[in-house]
Length: 487
Image (cartoon, rainbow, N blue to C red; front, top):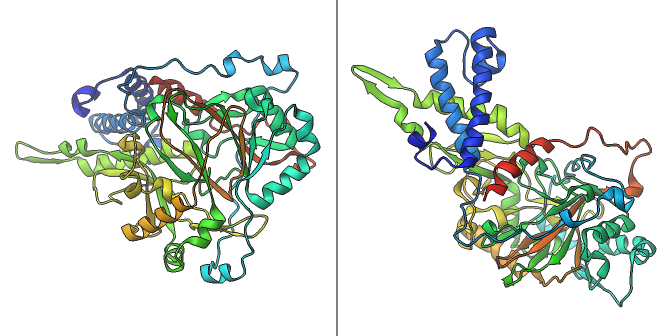
């Protein structure tokens, strides 16, 4: 049915997702027919309808869910698949190393700290103090081990508050996952989950050490990742530590950063104030349901018009059953970009500026450089349509190309490319510094850990077991196993 109606190959990914979708909808149908379940009514399978009608709507929902999830996978690369870079699988276990296994015990990412009311861009610039160089650098002299970082932890954290980012260069300790964990624990950083961990699009390099793999997959090697904070409207990691275990073996793949405080100062004041006054909304996914157009037809003299009710059933199904798993306060809307059969998952209205939670510095706290469709269409991008993002004004009107060109110009003017070598670490204040990655050829192994704060700042009643702080881990594993890793 999927292959005939949607017209794409029924890959093993599609089949797995169809099986799950079918089981879900059959469960809803059963409860609706037998028990008149409330959930069934929520997604448009109303009590008292004929079974044939219920099953017709169910089929549409199965297709909608299957298309939405199977399309998330990047197109298979035409290049030969390389063997995955050996990573945590070759390590000693945490237990063998005498450290705590963090699997299933990583706290959730903290809530975004917003201080974005009554921003006057010009006034903020008049009182702004000079900015320190970003990043600052600490270069190994040879022989530094974990004791160096313990002894200098306070100075490192003070330097981080001033510069926003520290580039640790030439340290042998961080050339392995084990040593990288020893580094961040010595500094006193408290790991947390990625803000979009529940999306399933973030795989671990070493879960027992709270280390995620960066975007190293061959299918996305030719995709340019623009400047962004690791943040959603709801959640933001306080700090991030990016480590290079192996740079790209052929070329490219450089990591880059930009100072969000500097961008906030360099943007044209009129453009910046206009974007702030109108606010923004970010669309994180497209679901094209053009195939549902065939549901409006004439059967003899009877006009059958199922497109609109099935579109609404699909919207409600995704809204009720899929969107909550991403924990991003998404709204499912049709036609925001002018395509009436395209459903988009759109975040809530947000400010493009924010004040730093500690220093009060005005920051460009916005992922336009990475998420604006206009900019993505003008640089290397291998993300499938369902994964294409867009940024609107708060009322969902389009942001002008002139404003986007200016934002792009200022963003790229402030980019600092970091040619990281094995063992190099960039420790970033995730509010103050945006990051990205260039395209690459060859194999590449970079990783990252996220931190909700400092161990010393944990409350007195902190629950070290974190037994209830691993949201969406099952979904994360499932999507990585059946979707992301299938290509």
